[in-house]
Image (cartoon, rainbow, N blue to C red; front, side, top):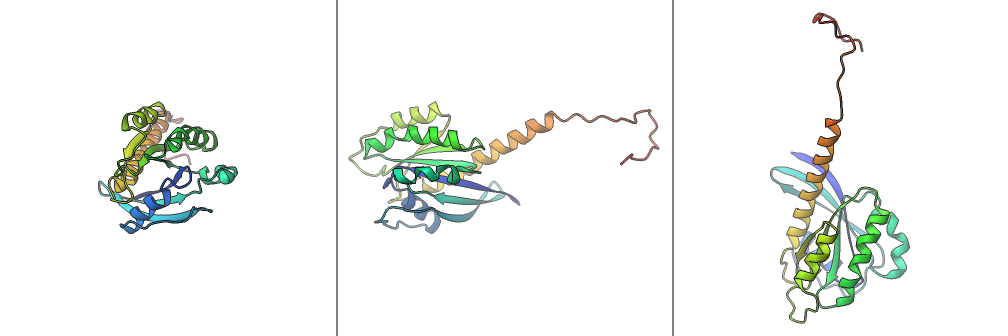
Length: 197
């Protein structure tokens, strides 16, 4: 059963592996990316979770400072976001807080967020999982350690995020429906009356 389509943006500093994560997810194999992303690429993928089908539109964004003026365009209408840092470059983790704040400032949908630490497979990590988990909790986000190279937890990023988006939207719709009050203006106990519309 087709349920919905969602917009997801992948954000983070330049060269943290955003495009490698996305290509690993879309193509199912590691593709070394030697150049920085200088524009935005959009990929579509259909996934099934619990007999429900979702189409996700994933926007791969440039991480360099000079492209940040375009952020409001990328974030507009986003249902979810993947904030990415590199376990081997501490400055990319320290800048993750800026990405959380920028996303909250420019997105109108209050998107669900996953904080992703890439290059988990490498030994020269300078950020701990506990630090990353603590930052994610501060912003009510999920945290995942991943490796674009080995494929570890790559599918989990998008499956978890899609499910969180769906669950969040379902909860919002239920709370909207609770506020609807049905009033029968012609209530005079005459069951034979026709509808007044």
